[in-house]
Amino acid sequence: MRAALERLSNYENLTRKESHGLMQTIINGETSDAQIVALMMAYRMRFPSAQEILGFRDALMEVCIKPNLDANNAIDIVGTGGDGKNTFNISTASCFVVAGAGYRVIKHGNYGSSSISGSSNTLQSLGYQFSHETDNLQRQLDASNVCFLHAPMFHPALKAVADSRKSFGLRSFFNLLGPLMNPVEPKFQLFGTSSMEISRLYTDIMMQTPRTFCIVHALDGYDEVSLTEAVHIQRNHTKSVYEPRHFGSDYVRAEDISGGANPAKAQAIFLEVLQAKGTKEQQEVVLANAALAIQMMDPTNLTLLDAKQKGLEAILNGKAYDCFQAFVKASNH
Image (cartoon, rainbow, N blue to C red):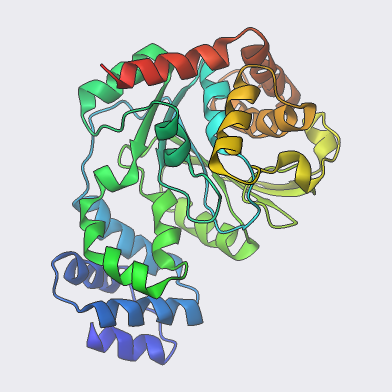
């Protein structure tokens, strides 16, 4: 660790192999809290490279709990956090719209780091029971087309840095790692990022995997399609900028997609959208994100507006909310 810190202080990059070995020393308890804090500060001063993040990820994925689930026809939809926008749970609601439209979602998530209520907070408060058991997760998938992997249950190695992260008190490179560490590694991945720098980093990383990905960054800083501004979209082989009209929508205001003043309000909005009781703006922003996911996964080459229509039908015919209810029920058996 000392040698690595010396190099990082001189703004040198580690190789993938070196960062892999460094993370192994952390996992094995061979570093002090002070050294871990110093490492986090080094990457606050200088953004990590794709090879460094990949090496850290490699070491953590080697020791994570991996449920035996079919990843071939499933997607993970995740906002990477850090945008400070305090929206309601847009990406999580989108998961159930996608599921209601007939597609499988294996979502990896955690408690909120920058929003008032993260995916784990919302689902747990609404009756969902976390599990790392394959049988339980498979039952959720079979019942609802969705299962949820609460990150701390699958990455116990990260307990080694819990105290250091808490004392550091700032977002760190560990926050960048989280969205990349779904233990099942679904074939499809939809990321939302709060900056172009993170978007480029994730693009470099995902291009070195066999997965089909879509990385979105709203140009006003949201880590999802917000419809408050145009959005930059990076796919495996193309990149583009979409305005709300491309999603068949109008621009919305920040307050239209706010999560409210407390977790209870954010959770109420989440349920209202799935029950077709949300505002037009709340529904439209969820449908925009769901449409990107459905378009990625559908083998019939749907247009974005066709994909959005599938999502809308899932809300209006009750299937999105049915999936959510079945999901919660299956987790409690």
